[in-house]
Amino acid sequence: MRSPSDQILLLLKSKGPFQTKGLAEALGVSRQAARLQMEKLADEGLVEHVTERMGVGRPRRSWSLSQKGHERFPDTHAQMTVELIEGVRAEFGEAGMDRLIKRREQAIEIGYRNAMAGATTLEQRLERLAQIRAAEGYMAEWSHGEDGAYLLIENHCPICAAAAACQGFCRSELALFQTVLAPAQVKRVEYILADARRCAYLVTP
Image (cartoon, rainbow, N blue to C red; front, side, top):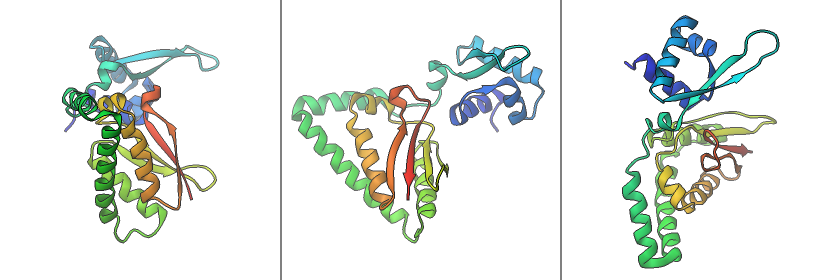
């Protein structure tokens, strides 16, 4: 069972900024108990807040993860991966790096297509894809968007260091989603590497 601190960090990671009242309701505790937890996490450097004025009354704090807090959700083998990328570039150049990413994309596509066997509707394929990506560490989920569209959301990127070092991984990811969800259109609308909290994709039938 997760501790209250871990529950709060997971909520902030997966659902975005929260006011103290919202955290208290999500955790089933009093606002005072939630405030004490947030102050403890702030002292540890795991969360930070901005003060928002919401009409009449006292300004309220909106809490989010700090950089240290984000680091509690690991970027798998980050340093080793970056070193391997640098080594491939040094030995084979950018074209060699692109070929490696394309080969990875093709292998993943085969696995995803096999996992989606029997999923005939777009919603079924989105559900399967979100399950696959969640199992891979992306904290993925999907939801209904506007005008019949959908959102595929990834609240965490376990290869963020690799993606920052070589954005070909991100291009490959988008191409992969477009392939396995075709003929739906897929567009990235939020991007962790552009300082967003998460990556999100608009999927339009």
